[in-house]
Image (cartoon, rainbow, N blue to C red; front, side, top):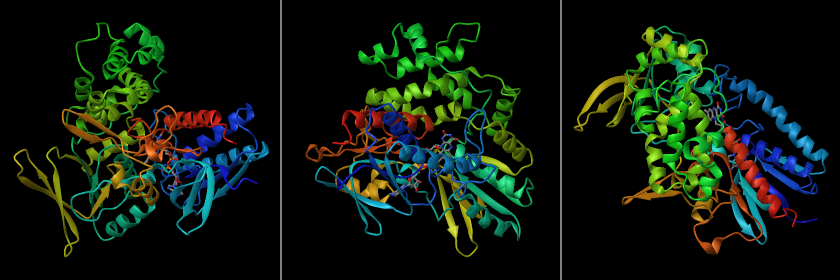
Length: 504
Ligand SMILES: Cc1cc2nc3c(=O)[nH]c(=O)nc-3n(C[C@H](O)[C@H](O)[C@H](O)COP(=O)(O)OP(=O)(O)OC[C@H]3O[C@@H](n4cnc5c(N)ncnc54)[C@H](O)[C@@H]3O)c2cc1C
């Protein structure tokens, strides 16, 4: 028997699930051999859930970010079974699948025509090809100015800490970040501790102080080819082939859809100006207006345009000029607040919390400082103003880090990613413009195949290839963390494995 397994998948979350599904399709179609041997390595115990859908991590109040949301823990409980079913199906086709849980892979090194994987306990495994499907574990939490902060997950642990404080008085909680994870924290604490300002107060702090917008009805699918022919007089493919598909073109398509329900022609405006307009205003009032606008399940043209345009934008991003990449980066947060808004049930919770004086938002466009008093066990928050002066705004028992991750490779929290970075097998993604160099996050890959591109040509792949998928590709595909994108990454990898004739 070959000393190498055909394929090692590091990580057993959603990415691994979609990859196994893609492989199953290819085996059924006779495009991959049924003699494949696959090893899957998961540092935890659950299969198919990963971080965001793991019932041990999230509570029953946490919903998915869709117009018709599902409970993430409930989906997660189903995922465990679905993963087992996919593995059983592959085995029924003749494929050998070995699932190794409680196995953290800490290094991947080249070994002849393949790779050696080493676990943190020193066990060695060999595989011809390796796929990194390590998702969110790859990235460190944002570093905050000030003292230790609590993590949102597992949510149970956060609740236990707050409960201990609520039992003896009022808990004042500062949530860093104002996008969907921050909404998860606020909604979850509300569900556990109620809307009594004598027990709980929450402040949400971010640069802009803006909250996500609110889902209306599920937006209809966007036929991007028809749209492209209408707006640009070419199909998307023709445009891409001629290198004439950048942020300007996508902007024109999105504005067309956003305004075409109206009676007037598409106004002279920019995506940036419209996103600013959509998110403008004091956040509690803005939320009330958004709730009114989306009441009764209205289809919102802006949501159709921005949500529908996201896969197109994400797929086209790798071929953008660096200037376009950086221009998108500057509007990315607002784009997401409007394109991937919060579920209506969360918005209603937040609205009630504002009304009762339990919740407020804080904006820190010029930065902030947190100081911790060991004696009084409180975090003291000051906001900077434009002139650099600082103003004290309040004290908090807890600070929860809910602002997303630092996706820069050198800051990675994953021992595996750090080893790959140090050995040159993984390198960062950058955009340069006007003397500025910005790291876009994640690892550099070939956008057509998801194969990792090493730092030096001398490290180029031999027969065995190293792939990455999912959130690791954030610098190449801005929507890399979404489930839709993960499914497309899986297809790309399977296509490449077919071409490589994986058995050889
Ligand atoms: C809070 C949150 C909410 C979200 N909500 C939605 C939503 O509503 N809708 C949506 O479409 N998307 C949502 N997403 C995004 C999406 O669900 C995730 O990006 C996706 O599930 C990622 O899957 P993954 O398998 O790539 O990564 P992960 O879920 O992070 O899974 C990676 C797995 O790899 C394992 N692992 C990591 N390193 C190693 C190692 N060295 N060795 C062994 N195992 C390892 C981890 O334990 C983990 O199980 C959300 C994301 C987050 C963080």
